[in-house]
Image (cartoon, rainbow, N blue to C red; front, side, top):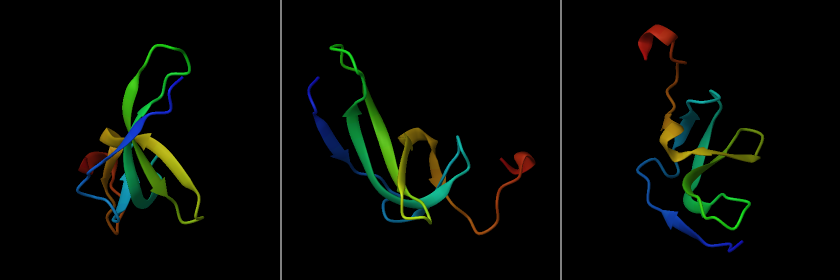
Length: 78
């Protein structure tokens, strides 16, 4: 497997964001277009790297990133 990747621009880089899939929040550190396939067939995806309050980073699809607000959103407010 080739380890190719490319950093992508994103309007929320460096800002506090929320992963809509998990509800976890943190600072958006990078968005990287990565080959996520463990096989020889390439599958590219834009992954967002978010640093949580613990200092550990986690990833999610870049399309799952939204700005974090002071108050959590309710299901009716989405």
